[in-house]
Structures are given as structure tokens and as C-alpha cells.
Length: 83
Image 1 (cartoon, rainbow, N blue to C red):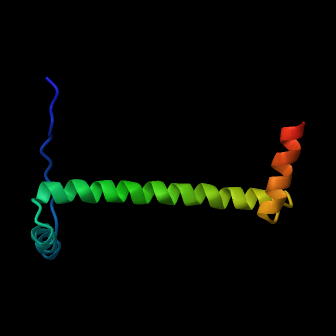
Image 2 (image 1 turned 90 degrees about the horizontal axis):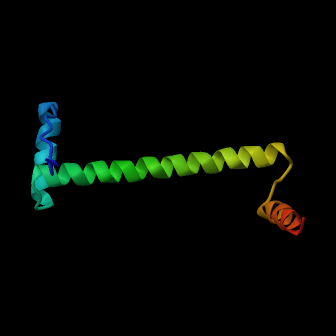
């Protein structure tokens, strides 16, 4: 049988637990709903960070090869397409 939900126990320091409960109440959500949204938001944040790290890697590689501007990259792409 396919489970729709899995119970998860999380322990927090009392101050953080109170903040979490206040956040859920302020958002008119139960703690499970808020936790799911927080996980999804964190996942989106991590994917964004990974994307920007890939961009930074690309910039470093381009600089090592002497490509300093987007126009340099565009020229290289156009040259390769014609080949």
C-alpha cells in the first residue's frame, strides 16, 4: 500500500519551537503544512544556489580562456554554429 504521509518527529529548542508555532498560527496553517512549505522553500533556495554556482564556474572557465564579455561568448557560439 502506498503511504500518503509519513510521521516525522523533529526536536527544536523551546524558543525556536515557540517561533515555529507562532509562524504557523500567523499563516493560518497547521505545523505540518508550514513545515512542508519550509522544506519546499529551502529546496528552491538550494537549487538557486546550485544554479548560481554553475554560473560562477562558467564565468571562471570563460575568463581562463580569455572570454571577458557576453559578446565574446556570442561570437564563439556563432563561429561554432557556422562550422
